[in-house]
Length: 179
Ligand code: S3P
Image 1 (cartoon, protein in one colour):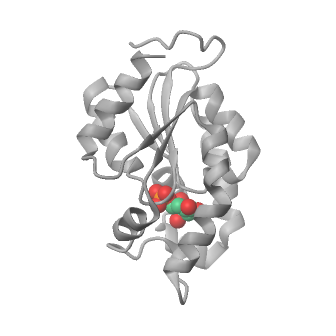
Image 2: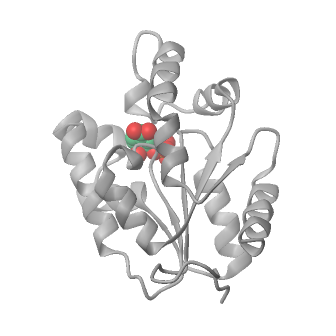
Image 3: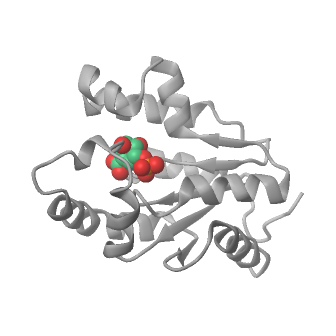
């Protein structure tokens, strides 16, 4: 297992954060393959807990219940098991989540420019927060409101625009080795 020097007292997981469309899920899958570590995805865990899709959870229970379940999912992760942990784009909204994630391991923020994010997100209507009259403007608002939160929570940030999922995973591993 890789060891992150200088991270005494923190777990050995690789935690992916970042805006919707930053490529967290695909990079997480590639990382899990390359490192042979288990992969956990907070969206998948919350969805399984409710037995519903994310849009269905938002519609039936509202965003707060979704956020509560997200925090609950983070509390269940073990500090002993080095894993790949993929998070939903809103995970940084609660300071307690950031604390929990940083305790689990190295937090990597995946970034992309707004146009790239919008292009990727527009492929599927699975993001309830963007089901608005003007999703492009909504994205800009959320992006600006959250940018500093992602940066502040992360040990490292990586621009994924123009990179394949494999390249993103390689870049993350290289970045970890250089720490
Ligand atoms: C959200 C991002 C989504 C999902 C939910 C809310 C957000 O995850 O958790 O729709 O607030 O940014 P992805 O980042 O995987 O799309």
